[in-house]
Length: 59
Length: 246
Image (cartoon, rainbow over all chains, first blue to last red; front, side):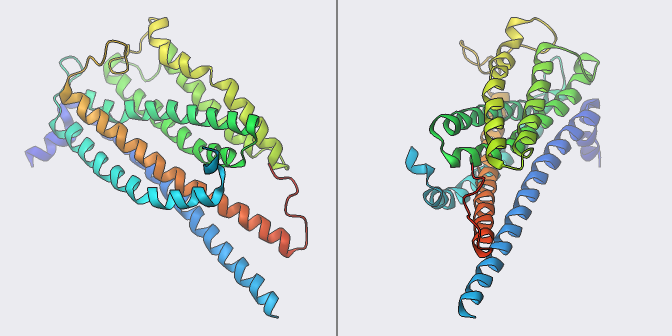
């Protein structure tokens, strides 16, 4: 418990250190999540358009 | 080099690189974080707050490196009219803006215990804030015009003009003796920081760079798919797919 407390307080600087790491984590992971989401959406849209196109050619 | 300007060839290369870049990201960042947070020593003046350096400094390096990449790509786009260069620059911009934001916020969190203030109009802080606005301006210009070609050209010009800010940021701590500390790593005489701190710092820098590569490849793939979608939609509607292209 003491060790965890030490880790959280970091010699009194914990209130600056952990938010700094948290901001970095949120921004970078957020960018990754947003980019992956956009990619999935585009992949799905392209698949739909391509299957529409081939349907029209068959029809 | 221009062979890479072919999107299909680029995509093939990207597919091979991506898993390696992802692996390097995970390994480097885990090692850097463990060393930086738990094993590196506290600073004799700043105590444990020096650990913020392990996210602040690599973010700052990335902010500058990515802007440089955008400026170079913009040059290729404007001079040699390479469309992929514009795709690359556009994909990189939000990543660079993100790293700049992290630099500013983590710097502020480091500044409060060290200097007693969240912000000061110091030469380096001010020029990095300007870098952040340049990124936002670049992104805004890309999206500002109906004709995406005009937006791309305007943004490329802004990127090139704004590049003057990069050496200003780098040498601001030498030219103006204001608050931000001078360089301890990228110096003519070599780094002045101890290996116990330099190692996690460099590991985080490698990790952030590899992460940038991963993100960039994802975003470029996304952008190339978006172009394909646009072309397909126009073809299926019976229109000319090359109208308004950059």
